[in-house]
Length: 467
Image (tube, rainbow, N blue to C red; front, side):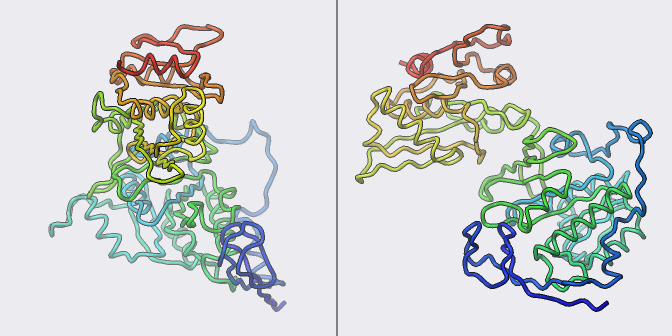
């Protein structure tokens, strides 16, 4: 049967399909996001057969008869990477890693595969770089870029530059690797489809075929994905549903720190985070990120407060800086860096209304040191203390951490995982913590740190600020 084709337009942001070209997507409102796509309305017998799984006929089995150990994982030498994955790579899993251009996605995966290739056969498929470019990066990571090639290049790491999915599948069958890296999924195309590489249908179908490969053969697959200008994975949203784990590599390119964040993980904790520092020889894992974020802190400086935020299951101590300055305009500015803008407006409104601070005449700037972004309300008390400290020119006590959510009436509310936050603060040498007052005392606070409870924001600021 001959295949007929038709032309349609698909939004690269949300996947909305339109029969005609539109300047603006009617669903998500994005401009110039509708991309022309040619699809088949009837498939040939051979192309229809390719839609079936690679494992043949499926047979239902009893749960007790299915083989597999939940603790069976492929060890990852990079500790931070392994922890974000949930303790290693699960055989047969498919992992998607996204991030801004130049943030270090290819560097991190090449570094991981080079360290794993000693005990495992790895196939690295690149659709954007040549084998020579990858070899040059590998030499730089091993410290041999000065002219003398390193002698410890991994022997079981195979490189290939290819974008045709059928050829890639052939290479996988011949090499029989334990781990496959595709860099990137937007460059891969199926030759039986007439749409261009990177289109919604190509990304979806290519990822589906790689998923079936992983599930039927037990090969772990890592996909590198491009992101849109909004920071989400480019292509259809179903791509994140197809894979088992979705990781985002975040960070400011002008900052040395990189955060590997898990937003979906079928084999581990969701919203966990690993911290790395970018060097000439690749990503260096930061085993104690709280200490790194506080390394350059000025003690007893007005406008500085320490918050304890949770990134997944890990507590992190970060410095929050606040600065107030008399405004030269009618409308004062509110400039946050690392916290939500609406959250800053809420905190400044509470300080103005409940503490009678004249912030309507002040420009307010708030910065989270280290490029970290805080989305939870547990840092409200530290943000309010930093702004008040700058406004009154009174320093916050250097050995004190502030934890608590701020209500509209000026009250403080308890946050989750308080014990883990306090233990992390005590391990870094902090002597005092100011937290919301508990209504029910179920168990004592951890030892090693003095905990002072406050019911309202005004009470907490009296305890935190140096007279």
